[in-house]
Amino acid sequence: MFLSLPTLTVLIPLVSLAGLLYSASVEENFPQGCTSTASLCFYSWLLPITIPVCVFFHLWTWMGIKLFRHN
Image (cartoon, rainbow, N blue to C red; front, side, top):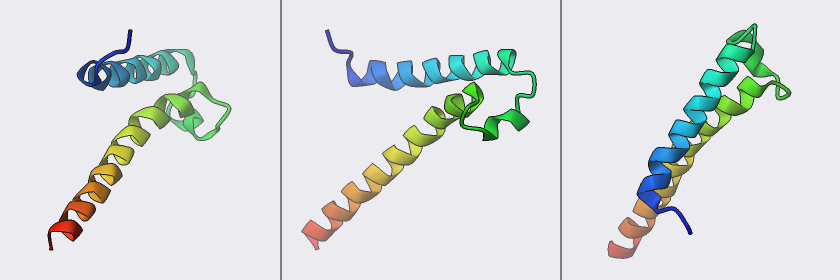
């Protein structure tokens, strides 16, 4: 059974927020230790930042295609 898009839209940020809070409680140097790719904190920040950027550029491309076709 596949999850619907609205469910995934809510579920993915909540899971990434839970990972961020978990890494904040586990890592002893939380804000400074997020720069290393070996750190768990790095990947818990990567997902919440990457998803909105991908959505933005997807919508930007879609709007460009729509404007180009109608003009």
